[in-house]
Length: 93
Length: 93
Length: 93
Length: 93
Image 1 (cartoon, rainbow over the protein chains, first blue to last red):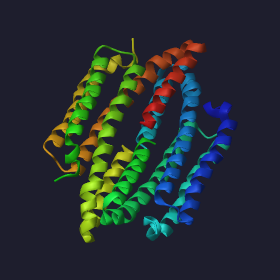
Image 2 (image 1 turned 90 degrees about the horizontal axis):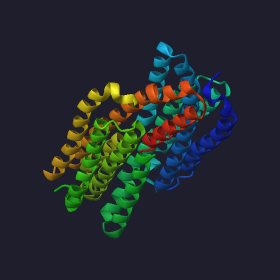
Image 3 (image 1 turned 30 degrees about the horizontal axis):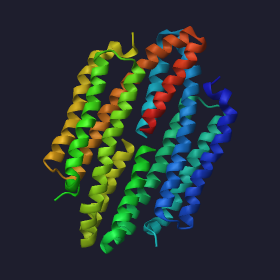
Image 4 (image 1 turned 180 degrees about the horizontal axis):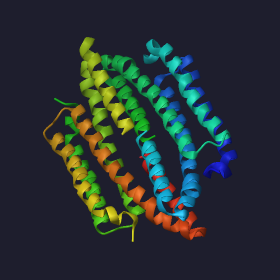
């Protein structure tokens, strides 16, 4: 069972909001809104997606990684390295 | 006329791809995919939205801001400050 | 003459602060400070360096790029593309 | 004992490189280098500082947080929340 399952319903409520914000960019480009206003919408959409990512990550650290470190050994190392690589991708994206 | 209008059709083709990637996050959470795989999808969605933003910004600098700086004076200052604030929001988001 | 020259003295005052914050990370690691406190210092150092970058970029848009767009033609295109590539590197770093 | 102690000497070797890159920005502004070249140096400095942060974070997850989750209970929750807040600051900076 994955870490975010406890928060699944919260995530499934938050995701349509992020999708709505990306669709908002689309509608604004279609209606030829002012560039800077579209960019403000892009920043809002990025923030919404990022919030989902940070929530997933917290659940992952608190469940999957925590479970692995309780077992210790190679499994723990693999999970910590995997989570760190995912964090690096988020920081650099 | 806004800067991105020349690229409007390219943007309108690229945006559904970004929307599809955000919907992909939703589907993966619903199907209870592994957290790290969801986070990889989140990074892809963020990159897709960012690419749209950078394309909008380039068009904005090459059209609206360029037009204002050709006029010079206060209009030019306002447009440069406005674009810089939008860039700061992107860099910090 | 480059765009940031008018702000050169302000930049030269702000940069030692950014350098001081990076040296602060060093000192904290040497003194074996708590990881999370070191990371807070890292975020402060990153923000200081970013603020310098955004200030440079605003001056560049308002001077070098503005000058090129006033001349128009290929020079303007080259400068807008060059600035956009620099913005992309900042957004993705 | 903090998580990064095993890597302390590696970090202390990498930090002067990050400091050198921030000093490089200073020198370039002093010598009035071209804005875009200064921004390229800023991106390199940011990346160097980020690499230090990601290395600290991996050690923190593999040691301090792992130790707390092995103990379980409230301590584990606190450490996971604290690490997640630090990750959020990095992602948003």
